[in-house]
Amino acid sequence: MKKKIFIFLLIAIILLLIFFQSQDLSLKILTDQDQLTIEEDFIYHHPHATLFPAVVRSSGKKPVETEYKGIELSLLFESLGVDISDNEKFTFNASDGYRIILSVEELQEPNNVYLTFQRDGKYLKSKSQGGNGPLQLVIRRDPFSQRWIKHVDEIILD
Ligand SMILES: Nc1nc2c(c(=O)[nH]1)N[C@H]1C(S)=C(S)[C@@H](COP(=O)(O)O)O[C@H]1N2
Ligand SMILES: [Mo]
Image (cartoon, rainbow, N blue to C red; front, side):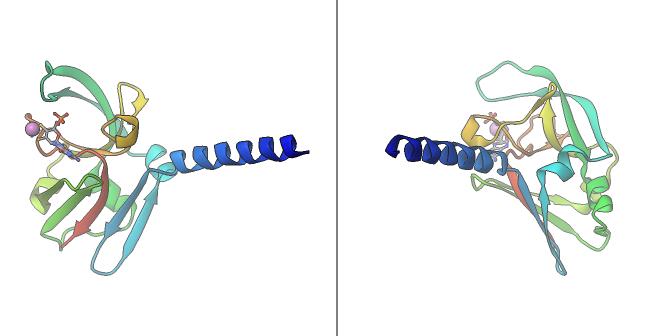
């Protein structure tokens, strides 16, 4: 009898761990009117998700040519019904405390700023799993990638 309870508890703990692992993609968008929380499904199945090539420069490594999959940020806001034209500044926060700020002009530049979730066909792993994700901003016209903020979890519109 004790053995059965033990096995049951073990399975319950494993299921809970799987649940929390798969829930780590969540993005908050704060506007002056609203607070939106975007979940994994919305991002992974977004109709405007596209593939594009990029060269990744990670410190201490040779540059690598890769293919990212992501959503152009202006299209993401459009699909959420968020009008960005009255905002000047966009603050991106990451779970490790890293932060970057973009202007509305940069965001509206065609084919430049993408919220990415796959690299070379694989979902970006979270920081705790040793990856750059689950979400990473890729700025195609920032070749040295200082502003390619990894683990983005919040966007604030001002
Ligand atoms: N969340 C987060 N994103 C970040 C950074 C960081 O420290 N934290 N470093 C930036 C810098 S300076 C560079 S060059 C690129 C690549 O960083 P890596 O060399 O650690 O891969 O990520 C950028 N994005
Ligand atoms: Mo860097």
